[in-house]
Amino acid sequence: MNLDGQTYDSLTANFAWHIPERYNIGVDVCDKWADGSGRLALIYEDAHGRTTRHTFDELKTLSDRFANALLGSGAQRGDRVGIFLSQSIETAIAHLAVYKAGMIAVPLFALFGVDAIEHRLGDSGAVALITDESGVRKLDEIRAALPALRDVFSVDLDDDESSPASLPASSPGSSPAPVVTRSFWHALDNASAVFTPAPTRADDPAIIIYTSGTTGKPKGALHGHRVLPGHLPGVEMSQQGFPAHATLMWTPADWAWIGGLFDVLLPSWHHGVAVLARRFAKFDGAAAFDLIARHAVSHAFLPPTALKMMRGVERPAHVRLALRSIASGGESLGEELIDWGRATLGVTINEFYGQTECNVVVSSCAALFEPRFGAIGRAVPGHHVAIVDAQGNELPPGAIGDIAVAAPDPVMFLGYWHNEAATREKFRGRFLLTGDLGARDTDGFIRFVGRGDDVITSAGYRIGPASIEDSLLRHPAVAMAAVIGAPDRERTEIVMAFVVLKEGFAGDDALVREIQQHVKTRVAAHEYPREIRFVESLPMTATGKVIRKALRESLMQDPDEPAAKN
Image (cartoon, helix red, strand yellow):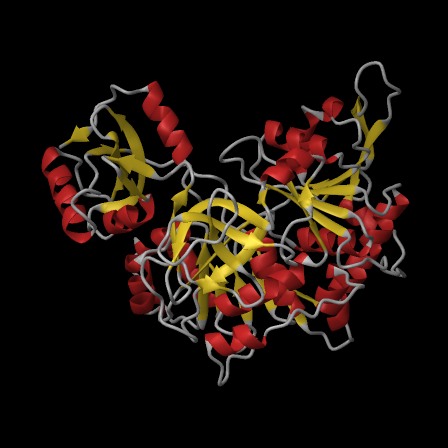
């Protein structure tokens, strides 16, 4: 997206989608750059700081070989293939191979436990899995519950260690078929490098990404190959006209999630921009500063939780950053984090909004307009985002309703895997409902009010948690905060805050009163937290979103737990 001489209005007015009928993600992001020039695609850094560099030429050969290995194992076009690995060269190869073979990728977060793996592999009917030694151990507990799974490729097995598994893949009473666990690299090295990609259409299924399950059992959002070109305007807008001035992109977000995969890895490769692969076992703000500086990262996607943890680190004076753009999404940023980003990182953090089913449809872009505090941005060119009522009618500016996206839209999912009822429930007329409440002003800026079940009703007021949490974070004692509605006889609900304090602060009554007064004077007298509970940590999804539902449930289970109230 070229922003030179452009305004937001001109970009929106002149935008048109150009998605070819025949389109394959793997060919687009890899093969088109594999021209023998040795163009850098990936820098991988392991936990010990050792780095390896990989070119698009290398990735094409490796992914072609592994595509042949998958086909040789019996997997066919349309089959589902699990990818249970963190950021690595093997993860990248597996994704490229699956797309080019016309199969459907099922990315799995590396820290998932056996129940999460069983649900996703079982629900998708995956026939093959790429994983490591840790993943194989977890799989050993549930193999018998996964009758469709036939082949497991372990990146940690040596060439001569491939062997049939000891447990049957079939359930009792059916014909047993052994699950073969083999070496990923041995299978790849022994496969042919001659491969012709499947002639996929843009609407053909490419990937199933399971929702985080904050409001129910995780559902598989099925996306077509068109999901990548559908993402591009939002990524380009949130990254200041990407790929302008881009040399290296990084995110701590796992590539198993739509944010890590379709906001960083694949859009970067679509534009021929190299990606840094380094995922911390446990995110560390100081280590993130060091990594960004050492590798001269120019662009990054940093979730709000990561930014808040980096904010708690005093940036070393000698650390020089080469950052040109940072995008963030998943939770509302707020004025405090944007101010900190400008002062410490030297960039205005652009906030974007979307979800697994329909991602990056709203964004800020400092190169086009100043962020409007309290808003998450404006509709990305190419997407029609509206606020609708219970009947699916668009509401006027200022009215609170459901944030919704009009169909058809190339970034929109094809539907939930084998769940037509849930797919129908996701729509109201022609609009896909995000499940979030918001409002739009006369300039098109959208304000996030909260999840439908996060909005607090207190004494007749409808209160969203985002602005209160932002205010709490601006208090010098607060490291993290989450706000929910707690049942109250007089007011229906009261605002209750769960607060993680910074080191050196004690959660006493004096601090409670100070924090309450802080919110009263900066947000509104009726929105301050009447109860504050100091906690050591907050429940988070794997993608770093606060699970307010878990906080509400804990309150019901422990209503008498001491909390500071005023």
